[in-house]
Length: 116
Length: 115
Image 1 (tube, rainbow over the protein chains, first blue to last red):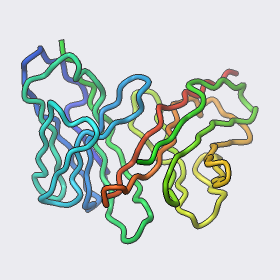
Image 2: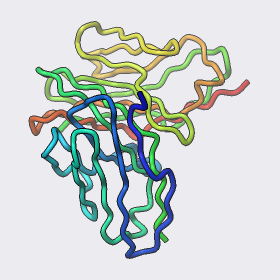
Image 3: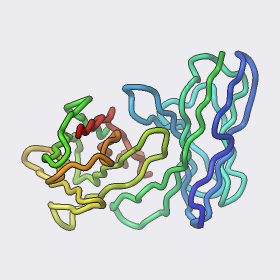
Image 4: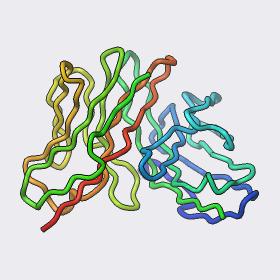
């Protein structure tokens, strides 16, 4: 049971290049998330997928697109990378519980992206 | 919308002394609250979670947190720090304003432990 896996671990891009960050989970979770982490700002939600076949914008979606390929996989695409997108990107997943108790999110190890 | 404020960006302790990491929250309803820990160059790991069952929540590695509604606080404590506790700690609140529960993170507290 690997939990949440992310590829690649590190990436350097030039401004204007595109790339896709991959995420997969083997916990049969319904919901998946993409965050970015910047110094002094905690984690901010980029996009999320409440269930297979749905995606929604989070707090900072501009410059990104996502695809929920199937229940296991959720990818994040940068179409034209900018230096402001230099960050550490985390994928997470959670079950969907009934009621108002919040689900625990399980995080991947992160992708460190630098845009020159 | 819900929010959390972590009152200290850095906390320094000596090994064997108590740890206190402070967090205040803002929520228009009974919140779910979490503490996550992030060791250097690693992902985030859940320390503990409050879901209104008990106000004192025990987590992994000897950490615990107490939910105080009157003070809107959820401070993280540990009686005796260990060198391996050096990490960044995030206080997190669940936001369900849009009908789907999302997590809102504080800005983090870096815990430094000296021998």
